[in-house]
Length: 210
Image 1 (cartoon, rainbow, N blue to C red):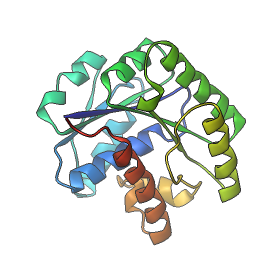
Image 2: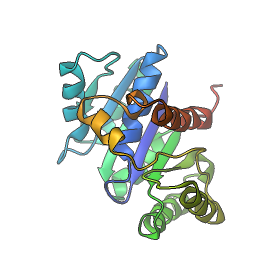
Image 3: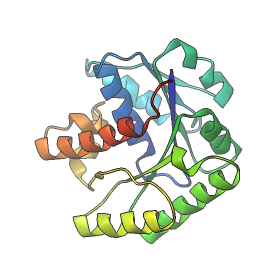
């Protein structure tokens, strides 16, 4: 049983996008997957799952809205992978999710307006006792290789791991998700490859069992 938590200080940086992609690809690989949506005010994962079912897309790992982290974790023992999509803010629940997770994924855009709060979240988690090795930053909404390189250097200089690859800023990703698909299921091969590289980086960052 593996728990991966997706957390962020702000919305719109790709937290739900990455949770969907990892969940779908893990389910496609044959794992029993469950998605926990902790943002009860939005419930965007539940809406996306409904769209996925309506489109007849497989696999469609189950999604449930949870009021508390403990409620979500109560299902962890029954699956191979539990992905936790936290609310778009850093609070006590973020720390609790990080403590319960085998991997904490922190998506961030490449601008300083994104990178600075992302670093602050990481710093607060490390200060609270979460090992920096359990944290993995993922670059999203990137416009160029140069922008990705600069953002990656910024995060590494702050002392954090950054996943290989990045999600480029493309309308096709939003279009795919509007139809209940994951970003790894977009119709464009080059964009699929970019998304698959990021998902593989998440898988590679998971601790080995035993």
